[in-house]
Length: 202
Image (cartoon, rainbow, N blue to C red):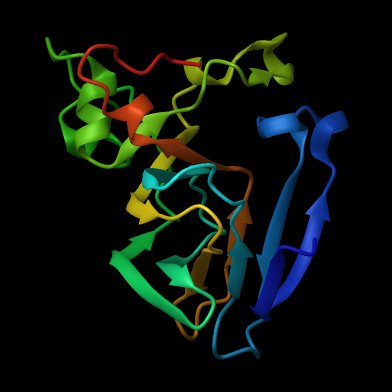
């Protein structure tokens, strides 16, 4: 926990493996703020160092749910973190099945499309879950097969080896939901933007 700093709210560890949750390694962290905490939940995560200078894509594993909140992402040094994009409503459940009842992935065009759903999602800053994560509730099937789990591409950032970077998630004020933390990925451009070899599903 030494790489996680809670600025507002309370950090909880949920060992959900025995409950067969669909999280990476079956557990998760959540930051919860009460209705009396007007600033909303706010957490800063120290990212692992990168091996070489270059552009990296930061991804966040997520599962949208009504008990989440509207959050703003930030990236940068500990003393200078800039907002990334616009606020995101994490209460919207992910759904790339084409079900119009849930907006999630449907807004990016998935409905009997001839274009691969992975490509459509990626254009909208979203991805399916990795094929390497197994969902124990369904006898070890890959989490990638389940429409409510996925990843959000936070952004592409130039990072230098030997420097320290941080990722911040701040909930909108007067919001009493929770910040969900499962896993992060730092992916080099040689993997996600390789002209000769597409990134695999793992």
